[in-house]
Length: 499
Image 1 (tube, helix red, strand yellow):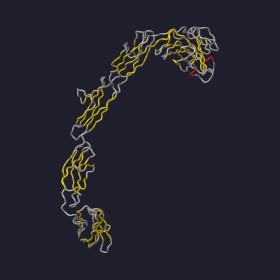
Image 2 (cartoon, helix red, strand yellow):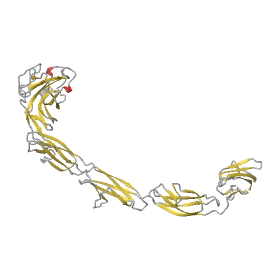
Image 3 (tube, one colour):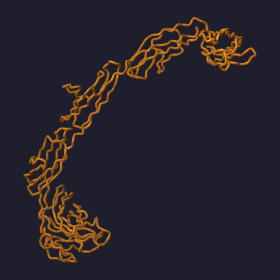
Image 4 (cartoon, helix red, strand yellow):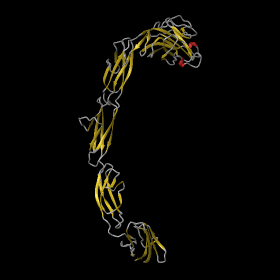
């Protein structure tokens, strides 16, 4: 808090602004600052009686015309002190029908004719009867004069935009005590807030009155969040009323669940992010009485968890039913092996299958390859150790043996088939013991007419032409392909269709 300054109430001489009604004059003990203020009533059409005593001061003003009066104070206004003074004002329309409203400004000055600091503004007012106003201001500098004048900062766009009258000032510029508040928010849903008032000034005793319960203490505790009205009375007669808001603690915990490991393992984790409240925080898992200071719980099995977060003030936030789930059991479905085509091709194909766990899966053969594809191609004969891992590093492993093919590389073509639907030898197709490519098989009738073409080595001719069965007999064929050495091969011959 700022250093405690000596209290200072400053007397105002002739606060009722008594004098002889006249133009271009200031009341006794007051001075003309600029232009032509008047002592009223009875001058230039202004006849309203004074609100206190017999006379008062009135001004007009415009964009380039300021009328004001001032008083040299017995004690200077001091910076960073707050002062309060009250007075009566009315909109003096009797001056001129072209005036718009009244507006008063209070300035601090070091000489009679300056207006160094604007201390207070009334804003525009329109009341044509006397009305009480109270000004409260805190100078930034030290001033020996206080100036009251028309506030031309808000004047209309005519010669005499504003007109006002002032009377019945307080007889003292009262120092307003400086009040500071130490407020502790309330926990959510409970009454743990508190307020402590500190007052600066040398007008003790300071007394307090709380509107909600009549308490006279400068401290309140066990308060729920809400607004509380307090009135402070100083020894110089000044009363300050304020509304104090006790906020509710913005205290909120959020949990991030990290799943790890395989079914049944305790590799899961809960990470907490806590905002608001007053740190440091304490964390309690599933009713534990021993607090944990770290916001991370690890080595957790699948299940439901409740976590209580407690801040340094004792506020609580509870996170219920944080769910950790096990993934489906990571299970090996099996493997399939397509052996080598012939002795030198090294074209065996191994297919692995798994389910469960957490995709994606990685398939690997130790020392050979690691891939997202479950099919391993171009394998030679030998024993292979394989692994399948999921996204949480669960592992399935095993071995598979690939036999070395004993047969020579060749493509064999049968010399007869019987497409009679008995499921035996119904299709004319080649038997391949090689790794071939660019396969093409053509079948012709005895007149050389092309009746069938196929580029799929696994497919074959069913003894028809465009779906219509052909008669038994001898048919000619030709096949072409590239063998495992990429050499172009052509074979031809005949086949007997038997029915």
